[in-house]
Image (cartoon, rainbow, N blue to C red; front, top):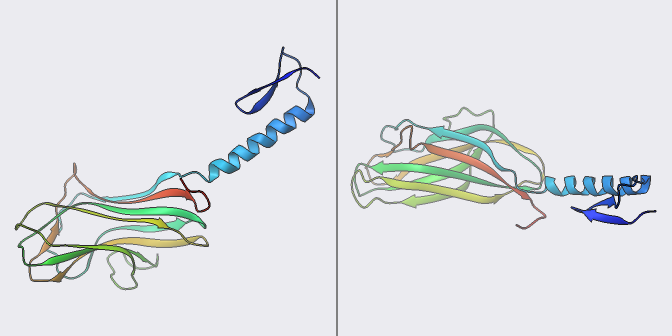
Length: 187
């Protein structure tokens, strides 16, 4: 058999000779291994929702954005993130932002049957001050394929001021899900 060189991990005969069946099979095996490994890599953004309309004053828990149905694949890690702006009519109240899962069959605005996956609280310094909301839940994973609805909620937890989302077409509130890769692989 002729001399063999390796190009990108694949075998190739030197001098333009014919490939042997064994060499082709080794290259096919290598290709299959590469494809299996690629499936473990992060896939990035896999679901997205946005809102470009300001809300009215929010006191009680209110769904401000949702992804109606998403299937979390078994043994993969996901990052769920809410990003946008809000304001408050005063300074004597505290608000809470929560990321939740809910059954897919639930109506989009329903605030029962929620399972909180991450929350953050904030109190404004000035009335009607624009504030950034960013709530992130990295490393969310399930042992079996699981289809859920993702809901982002805003609520006033104390005080009497009204909280409202502050958004427009160039500065939307976004709710995203990112695939962070296979559970077994640490990046």
